[in-house]
Every structure is written in C-alpha cells, then in structure tokens.
Length: 98
Image 1 (tube, rainbow, N blue to C red):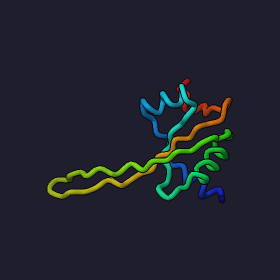
Image 2 (tube, one colour):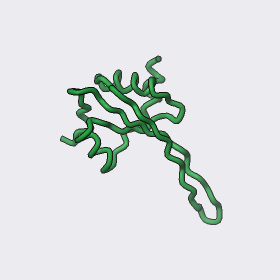
Image 3 (cartoon, rainbow, N blue to C red):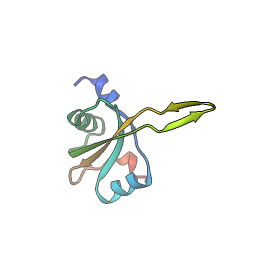
Image 4 (cartoon, helix red, strand yellow):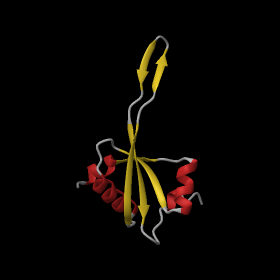
C-alpha cells in the first residue's frame, strides 16, 4: 500500500462520548475512514501512522440523513467508521486527552 493511500484511508478521528469511553476502558479507538477502505488497509494505515500494533478492526457504515434545504430535499453522504482495537500495551497518545 503506497503512502498516499494510507493518508486517504484515515479521514479523521471520531470523537464522541462513546469513543472516549471505549478508548479508556477497552483500548479501542474510532476513526472516520474512506467508504471503500477494507479492514486490512485500515489496520496497515493505523499501524504505520501511529506506530502501534492493531489486534482487531471492526467497521460500520453510517447512513446519511435526509435533510431539507428550503423546499428541496437533500441527503447527506454515507460514511464509514472503524473501531480499532489495539494490542495490550499500545496506546494512541493524541486521543488520551492529557
């Protein structure tokens, strides 16, 4: 996997109350990823960017909401999130909140 694809796979960290609790108690971090990203790609991207060992990756696709813009009805894009479980002893420091 080339360097450009690695940075296109990981879009952003997904910060929420649930993801903060998962990071604290389960050593599991949540990322917004490209909609066409596969689990092995996500694993390689996280391992290379953050220099950690990934033990498991789970993904889910969040469907875009239907919204009104005046008289027009529009729809937000679908997006994919990845729950990345790190191996014992590995942490991502930028998400620890300290």
